[in-house]
Length: 452
Image (cartoon, rainbow, N blue to C red):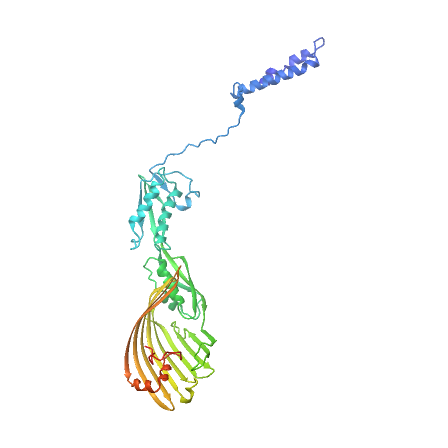
């Protein structure tokens, strides 16, 4: 419209082009064009409402426009997880006046309700302007972390779908329980035995330390190597433990050669051991050991033992027999033709009081029958026949300062058959050196014939 007013009309153009009309000179044309441009610019600025152009009027806008914030409200609907914003900061905010804690189970002894409410109160005070839905779940995550620090490795706190009224937000806790135990990749060990060895009650909350002990106890089965994998259970708040068997050895053994022997019975030694694992399918083990000395070949030691768990996976019972037949070959004693034999039969039990990666405690009980007999020049120098009851407490631990081990034991000895050792000791004091229930070792003259 503006251009139509500024440009000449058709009538004016016709008139201008008619004969006898005065034609505009070419040198005046630039002035007319410039005038038209100034008028166009002025008219366009007025049409856009800018008014008079100022030096600052053409500067770009550098400040970010402020988006008006929505004040936090006391009432809001918390949607299901699938409908919640992905970003923690997205969505409207709600003013939280109080967190209400609901648990599907009773609180364990190691978890204090007051501690959890204190954690939630600190989160509330840290958000005076209100919480988004994502920030509400972050507050619940602090409760989850508290449970995990108490050993409840599967506990989960969450903000359920709810309608929030008067600023009261409900936080629920699933503490996590063991639903069932299954097995995978086991061939020699039955599933029933593996599950019974775990021995974890399904109605108890799942804790790190008891589950660690159960898995370590599982790997104490001879020849077995396995780990545990958790997967979702059949019911809400339950998990399933899958025992994944990695290795099952039917036989184990070793052969060792060393020079740790003694000169009287032979310094060079050769020892062999073989173990038969799970031979009856009950997690038992049969072990056979033999040791022969050389240079001189004067000592032969043999040991056979059998053990298995009884009644409870933490309680192991066993029976052991060993025999040591030796001849004294030391210079000066060889002419005496000193020979001896020791035997020991033991029945024992071992109770695991604590089983973990960093500390172990065991209570050991044994009843032993020990006999020893020595001959010189074809004559019987005496025979020892003892019954020994032993009760021992054993422990070990690993820490940053090193490895600690200890043993406390009480022994009670009954002499089944008495021999007058005083006269024999006066006549052949060296005979006391060899009457031991272990493979022959160096003993001082004052050492008793049979260690108890």
